[in-house]
Amino acid sequence: MENQNEGKPIIFTDKSGNEFKAMELDGIPLPPFPEAILGNSYGEHFRKLRELNIRDNDVIVCAYPKAGTHWIWEVIQMLRGQTTEYHKQIKEQQMLEATNVDRIEAEPSPRLLNSHLWPRHLPKQIFEKKTKIIYLTRNPKDTAVSMFFHYKAAEKALNYHGNLSDFVDLYVNKRLPFGLWYDYVLEWERFFKTTENPFYQFSYEDMQQNPVDHVKGLAKFLEINVSDELCEAIVDACSFNKLKKANDEVKDDFLKHLLKEGYSMYRKGKVGDWKNWLTVADSESIDQMTAKRMKDSQIQLKYTI
Image (cartoon, rainbow, N blue to C red; front, side, top):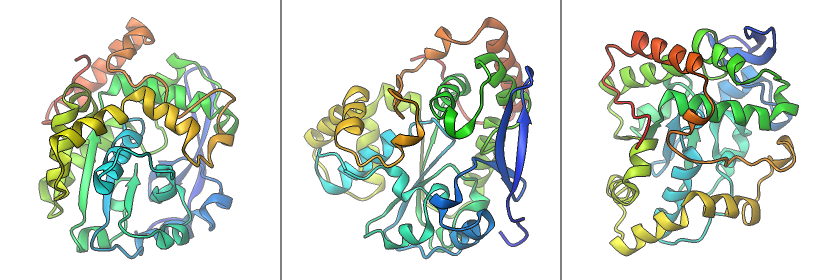
């Protein structure tokens, strides 16, 4: 990003006056990742990231936060390894915006990069080399609820103390790290209309409803020959409860200390859980903004399956 700034602290304030601290880079808010993790200043990290050397067999998974990237990352690792064994590494070790660039460079091939960044912030060679992109969407109501509980789990790192209704105010009307859901998904929709990168685009809801079909579809997209039996076994191994158990017992989760005791990256993994949490007013607020912002979009939203 040639004209980016160095990354400056910004504060969002919800309707109750609770503050949410973030960083802004090139006009886009991002989480306040500690420089101790990035290994550089914010600006330097993203400059290095833009120049990251992309390999011919790299693949990248992209999505707005809480759309299911942990799930899909594990599925693809199993497809590539022709196994149902869990990868000991967590996806954050290859997450572009949250990992030291030197550490990403040191990862052995084939790498499975992942990111919540906008297209403009990704390494330039992803587009030059036409890297395969796997892109996942999730309906805005379940996304909002899942994000809220994720941020509450990371409260000691993010220091946000608002309730769900306060958070929906930020989510719909103001700003959040990685931008508003609407801005993000519309930007990616525009990107896919012009890109020469091969891409596989699907929704969290479709993956929940037709998991075997999408595992087969991903295998075909990645040019991996797999049996129907292995695809079904991968679906079973990557079911929510089994992945949550693996994350607790198998994974080398070096980020656990950032979460409250007893919390996990995995909460429920259900479609339609928003009905148990959103007030009628907050649900209608999201509906109104969705009708306004998505009226010209081709993205199909599912709130139940």
